Length: 250
Image 1 (cartoon, rainbow, N blue to C red):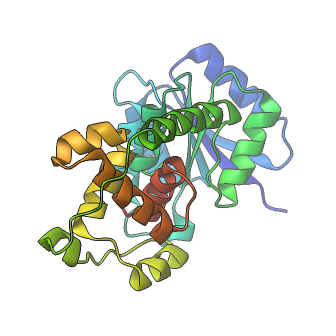
Image 2: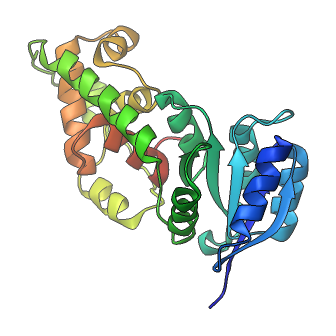
């Protein structure tokens, strides 16, 4: 059985040494390198091409999000299966941090104070190609999504204006996930829906989207419902994650 090759990028010496020592005790994980800053970590990830890179978001030179962006550019010409997976490790629990990490190309997101068993589970899940989000972070994101939905449901729905150019023109989007691409081929997003989706990913509420796009909140709600239906998701959070993971929004 081949081991999961891991590179750890963490600037806090005690944390890095402790994590390396702990992960070395796990039978199916092999720590092939560790780095104390982003530049050294990026070079190590580039040359060693591990299965999973565990990257601290708060590095002293280039942060984990920028490091992930640079890594994805370097690996852009590789086959998807040959690219290193990225597990972001952080103390941050804000929704925007999570979405920013996924937008940068991260595969998973875990808190630093997670238990070793949880971290190992995250590494294994990430290696298998699954997007893993720490349960504590997931609860925060879902709570925020429910709050936004409750606020929007309190506003009456206005009918969407028909006949406008943005309502008629469809946007062809190439998706990294075949199931999403098939959905979009059948039910493509309009230009306006894509704008709304980008703002959802950016963490905007319906009221904020309304203000930015100069439309009523009711019209925004209509667009949001259409987006959820076309992406086959149940809420705004799922739509944001699907959009980021499938390449709909960069």
